[in-house]
Amino acid sequence: MKNDLRPKVQRGAGNRTVWLALLVCIVLPFVISIPLATEIMIFGLFALAFNLLLGYTGVLSFGHAAYFGVGSYACGMAIRYAGASIWTSLLISIALGSLLAAIVGALAIKKRGVYFAMISMAVGQMFYFLALSPLKRWTGGEDGLKFIPRLKLEFPFFVDLGSPYPLYFFVYIIVGISILVIWRILNSPFGRLLQAIRENEERTIASGYNVTMAKFVSLVFSGFFSALAGGLFTIYLGYGPLHSLYWLTSGTILLMTILGGMHTFIGPVVGVAVFLYVQNQFSRYIERWELLVGILFISLVLIFPDGIVGTIKNKYLERKADDTSPETEPELNAKTETEG
Amino acid sequence: MELTLTLIITQILFGLALGAVYIMMASGLTIIFGLLDVVNFAHGTFYMLGAFAAYIVISLFGNFWLGLPCAIILVGLIGWMTESLLIKPLYGKDPLYPLLLTFGFSIAVTDLMRWIFGTIPKVIELPKGFAGSFMSAGIFIPKYRVFIICLTIAVLLFLWFFFKKTNLGMIIRAATRDSLMVRTLGINVPRIWTFGFALGVGLAGLGGAVNSSIVAAVPDMGVEMTVECFVVVVIGGLGSLGGAILGGLIIGQVISFVSLFASDWSNVAIFLTMFFILLVRTRGLFGEAGRL
Image (cartoon, rainbow over all chains, first blue to last red; front, side, top):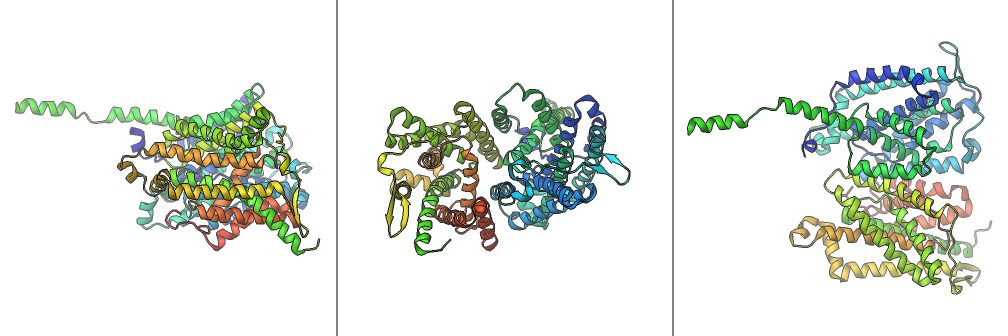
């Protein structure tokens, strides 16, 4: 009950958490395997972009893989078919991802949550089928986008993205900057507006804000960074898998976000780290990984909707509230004594 | 290929048969949404369960006509349990929670079925009477597809009768409009909700059972169906049974004709149809203004 009444406003304290997380990520590739660390960075960015929409604006998108996948394929195609440089390809990814988000927003952002969820799922599936069959010639169909030439960065200085450490730090820098940008967006009046929309949309409208535009912009930002993550994914893998458009990818990013805590800033990244790490360690032994994912999902929704970071934050906040709550009982007793 | 009249009529009939299954599925989804305000992301999963239930019953008892009602009952029971155990605790919370839960449920159950039954498609044999097609003036339609159309019409008539003429149906209609009031009148509304959910997924199960002779039963058949149901319901307008029917008919025809000319695009075509209709009429064809 107590937790339900308290508004889930994220405070500025996130700044310290963000810098701490970024610091941790510098040493991450030395602690766990480099591919895993790189994936955590990429999907962490994807999850943050996703949570911009879900946790902050309160809009659930079930087909976010569309932006990720479009970013992934756009980057790969630009490199393979147009011989574009890494930077150009990433820019193309971002542009297309944002454009797609704008289109989806134009069609559907005014709709009620459940409608938007269904439409976004349809968008995701549509792109999956597009890549699978009709556009097979360009996307490689089921096999994915292969034969992307060797990746290297020419500007500002030469970096061989074929080798793990330079690749990781390239990804790290881009993701790090993105995280700071997202943080800046969310800790601004606009960010507060998004949270207001999440908490009570009618009241926000009544207060005179253009809620539709705010939600639209939020979606475009989300598409922007999701596509960037997708582009980085292609660079990391050296090829563009069809799986990046698959509905399970949308579902997994949703799960990781909730697992970490959708009402916190850094929660989604934590969720990604925990999930990918556990998957990396245990999916070898556990055959029915998807079954576990489903059960985890159900358990989270029923028992721990606040996720890891959310639950920790609640415990911490609860303790703080208990320390500072005024003691009213003794005063009353004192009064009756004097009166009696 | 020549676009003859017989070809067109054949395709229309074929589209009706396809649409029939979608109508059945979308009706179930609409009932659940109208009554519980829950969008069942696991609807396709119950469709898949229906297909497997029919397969098991028919394999065990060899009787096709036993398989269909058993599928409905079994899936309805599973739906009853699902709603009572998993969805009921979420009432009163954020309306997105049941979506998330049913989504997770679909992932878990699909994988569970993969585990139990493997991924090799299970085919159900049709009774001899359904073999072959009706032919007349060059128009072909397989007998089984005609059966599906007739069955769907029967189901729709049953639903109409149930909702309009029976007490329980009247209670459900009332609870869809104003559940608080119905509760005030002393009726156990949570039990009605559970029943509504079971009915909705029972319809999905029937759809699966009926379709499993055409499309072999495979655990993964549920996911695509869920998304296709959503498209039907978005086109028709969420919450409207008439919309579900119209949406199903449209999608059936779209798939039928696109498969004829550009089969690569048949999957994508339904989404393009959805977007086009959304552009023209943003709340779906029969969507209620307030509910959107």
